[in-house]
Length: 618
Image 1 (spheres, rainbow, N blue to C red):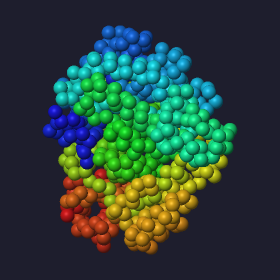
Image 2: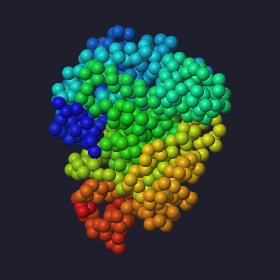
Image 3: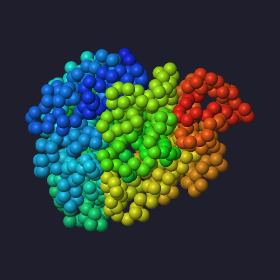
Image 4: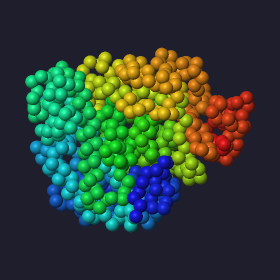
């Protein structure tokens, strides 16, 4: 039997190649009578995979009383939902937590679990951590407490005992999520968590693996009296301390998250889930990729990971810039299939929320999904695909009725089905940007909590280098440039031609000099886009049209021009200028089937809000 594997641009499921395109269907929040119609709607749109959580809190409201068969509530009948999906040829990504967020009380943690106070995570002052946001704020178990892991193992055992026969290859479950947004429920700031004695012991064990002796640790930390591992204390905000202490605590946070996920994967394996694709959601943090490190998590778990992406309407280029950064991070982490676990589809409406922004319209939603493909993602999970309580404007209504956005999903899925090379095409990048993690670590130490509003822990000046880096990659996206990231802890990729060192970056000068000596064109940004132009570096396709974003993706045989349009621009043509990297006499609009001829090197593309792809075969 061949395990499910993520390859370049698609999943291999047995002998099938399946795009990693899915839609969230939270069946346990719906009327069970609506499940068949909703799943019919999913199949009719051509979405091949259904993604869904299991809420531990609902399935085990009292310790030891697990209901996965709908005995106490028909909405909890997991086998029935899986059977309905299988009958329609749909595959399933199952997400059993233990934490699911999902706007659930306790984030899906059972009340009885959170009542065990001695297992709860602590902050720097020894207070219980409160994760997530009101009205769902709750306590958080320490990932390192053995009794918490025992409870989790018992829960996952109950899940697989009930639905194990529905796993690939005998059933539709092809993927399982290793926890959800593993961030101590959004409280993994430098001093926010976790100071539980179990976590501090794990920190000391980690230090013993990083330093050959306590003498070397004492020297690195500038603590000559530190003579035993047990005396090593994590940093606290009221102690100035040595920056190395904070950096080690940050690196431990990176390791701790990955270790927690690796432990969960081992539990799944012991329970027989050995042939599935494992996935991880990474939630957006105030400091990108810290302390959830995409590369560290992938190296430790081999899971297909990605960052969730949402925007507040109206859509703007800065939201697309975040997509581009996330895609570059996935490539740098070695993901064969860059993927978004939650790509906003419709919008969350919190109880009591005062809405002071417009509703997302179907054209804007299509532009958002298309932008994900344009920056280099090969797959995504539409969250939500089917409306449920506190959610609006998903493509399918809670009763299974197609909504206004359904036609837009259908158009994109048909485009991908008819042109499978689209998901294997590589984005045409014009530069590589240095990603020096110590600058991000320093900013992380000064930033505080990931739960809004941010609470500053230190000198804001410590974030300057990081924000210069963020400004650099944002400027590139706004200028129509896709880019790669170079983690300065690793060798510079041999194909690098242009390297950008952001202002105030502490990237070691010796590394920069070595890159220049090897023939790489090194740019220290001032007027960044002007410098790129002066060096003859242009985006392969570009346009001056407002609220329009264009990129190029390439395979060995075909170049794909992505055109993303949103906003309230008047009807008319978009002038698309191609660089010499795209020698095209004509472009074929894959959305309409029409061909477009150039005039003086410029293509006039008839205006239409949303997303389209044009192709030239080499």
